[in-house]
Image (cartoon, rainbow, N blue to C red; front, side, top):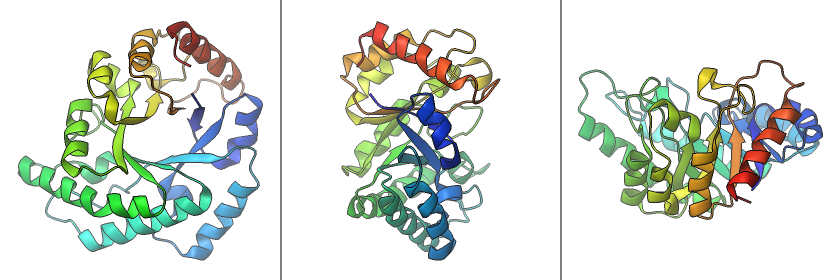
Length: 261
């Protein structure tokens, strides 16, 4: 299993020295979907010279670009996605993480069923575009303190099933699951849809190994579904980059202890 870190490509050398496998970048900051191709070209050149590849990118939509509610601009959303996927392909990015809590937050008083229909309709529009560029979108359930929509693997899996496209899948974030007391067995239940992972310690959303959190129950659930794709640390640090190598070493120890490759 490849392990990466959610950070800027400028940190690739540090991560390579710490034995990480890849960088997970930021769609808005790296792919800049509403900026010119020239603006992206400079970022792409940095990535091509970097010590590690960028295999995934998160923070898909900015908070102001709503995909639910009364202020949805569907054509702008589709243009944004197409540009993001085209540039992702140029950069070698295979996974786009669709968390975007601000963009998908259901406004107060807005009909939840209609919001769900809006989200599913958007996913149906953009999943084929992702496929054309060799990209898979993974829906990231967020804990209830961060967003009021798509808060569990079951929520995300229902959308993936409704869209029914091979380039729309599910992300399991161990931090968000832990925050909402979502049991590891949910990974087994919805494992056929899971294609990407995020992890951080529950206390303070810090890097694995900071306070000794045991991720074993979640890792053993991943072992049951024979998970073999990538996992990214999405976390804060008490001391970066000094802590990076030790954090990764401790997490890999837990992975091996669980029997997960």
